[in-house]
Length: 254
Ligand code: SF4
Image 1 (tube, rainbow, N blue to C red):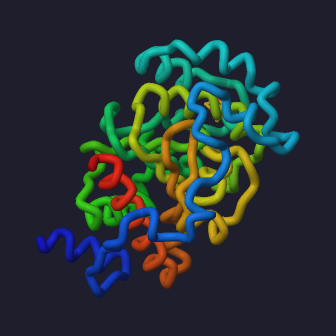
Image 2 (cartoon, rainbow, N blue to C red):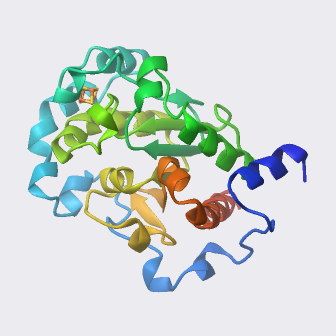
């Protein structure tokens, strides 16, 4: 093992180095492996599940129609000038996303914090350093086969959790990013990201360790790095989730 990887594991609070060896099908009880919605990629997620009223697609329908065919540059410039929800009021800039636009791995977080708002890139503060360590420990690197985006592109004031209507307003941008990247695997970092991708309320503890789906793309749910910075013992669980994600990708590549 390289020293870099050793350091990355240490930063995650992981001492023993191990990986899940069993195939994905054996990593969790069979009935928990596939969560709703069913893999019908052409069917909008909203048609497959009952969304809370605040997440109903009516609120963001105009943005959907405007973004569905945009390429990367038009999408980025649309996000940069977007005023579709109240989060535009206090932002320094919208934070679009970063990384390999043809990545196999796509990580989805919650929203920009103060440092991200300043620099225009997701996950650049302390939480970003931990995410980079999680990537490195998994043999990944920001920008190489990895794309990172957030559920909302503008910083919620005081780093509060984004409201459901703000997530709904911004969701078409994330959907279009996913369509353009076409990742093999989505990793939801934290509860808001999981709810954005899966379209329903859930707790992280109930969502971890199961293979969910966004259309036909598998989704693994884990903790947000900012949460892990406040709850150090849960870093070990995040490492288990990253191993689960790596095994899922490996199975897809077999
Ligand atoms: Fe637009 Fe999203 Fe920013 Fe709201 S958070 S203003 S929907 S880019």
